[in-house]
Each structure stands twice: as C-alpha cells, then as structure tokens.
Image (cartoon, rainbow, N blue to C red):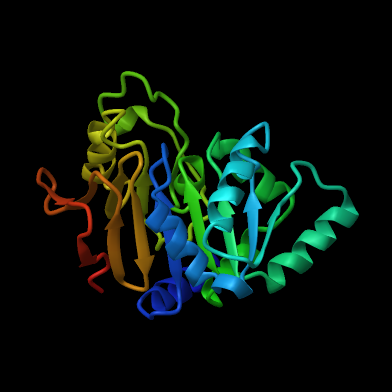
Length: 253
C-alpha cells in the first residue's frame, strides 16, 4: 500500500493540482501567506491551523491573524489534545477544508500526534485531492519522508550524525527538506545525507523565506535563498542556489 501511495503521490505532483508552501521558520513572508490564502479559496477558504508542534497556541494565533489579512473565510485552530468526539469532528473538518497549515515547534511531537490520531493517510489523501498544505519550521520538516528530527542540531558535521524518522511525506519519497537553513549553518548535515544516499534530493530553506511548490513548479518567496542539493556521483554533489523570486522546475521527472 505504501508503494502504491508513493507512486500516486509522484504522479500527482507532476500535475498542477497539488500545492505546498514550505517556510523555513522565522518571519513568514506576507506574500507567501497571501498565496496560501488564495490557493485555499480566498474569501471562501476553510483553513485548519494545527499547532501540535508547540506547547501553546500563541504561534497559531499569530498565523491566524496573518492569514485573516488575506481572507475573510473560515480559519480554525485545532485543539492540542482530542477526545474521541473532538477527533471525529476534526476528521469531518479535514474532509471538507480547503487548506491546512502546521505551526513551528518540535516536528517529532507533531508527527507522534498525527500517528496517534491516525491522520496520516487522510492528510495525504486530502493533499492529493487539491487541499493546499503549508508549514513553518517544524511544520515544514514533516513534509518530507524521511524527516529530519532535529537531533544533533548543534555541532553536526555530517549526515551520519543526524537522526531521520518517518515524516508525513507530502513531498515525493526520498526528498529531504531542512529549515532555518543558512541562519543555523545546516549545509553540512543536508549535504552529508544526500551524499550518503539517505535521500535523492535535498531542499534547504532559510528563515523568513518560503518555497511555494505547485505540481513540478517551485518559486522562492522572501528575502534570502533556497538551496537544492542533488547527488551527481558517489563523491560529487550538485548545489543550486535559488534567489528570491526565482521560479524553477523542482522535479524533473
């Protein structure tokens, strides 16, 4: 089933129906939040903000305020802990919403709750059906599978010292996404993982910057860069630096 879903995801990513907003943490570019709101349906939007990566809803409230600047539609923050009735209501809402946004914090806690509530398959299904997904920091980290857990963030010298875990995997399998990329000097860890074939493609997104992916096409939004890593041989790594405003094809196949 996982193999079939991966093939379906790769096939759908090549079409224009899927939209994914990845923010590297820090300040969220206003243009990126506007794009998310428009893709969610603008005044007809029905957006869910999932704050489970954080212990509080403070960040979610700020994100709600930012999104409400660009839409008069519905925006709801999901509770941290769900009883069976709340979970049923959330599942019903996911089935009809037009946008889902994950806040920053701890990606491991976020993924643990997604697994506990058995929402992974439903979230992937809704993404394939055209619901726009977005995230910042930890909310960006979960979009790949494998997912960087954040273990050894301080002093990591190569990919072998970085723990990987199962992520939500809205990006094609074997793509790894990293955030706070330039500010926290994470070049070595992502480059190491790709050279070691832990992933086929690496995406490093700096703070205050977003990568908007629509099908194969991607665009950098914000003041700094997005770096793309691709293994060219056992000892050679190709690195592309994408400047603000750059549009490009992220997936060649």
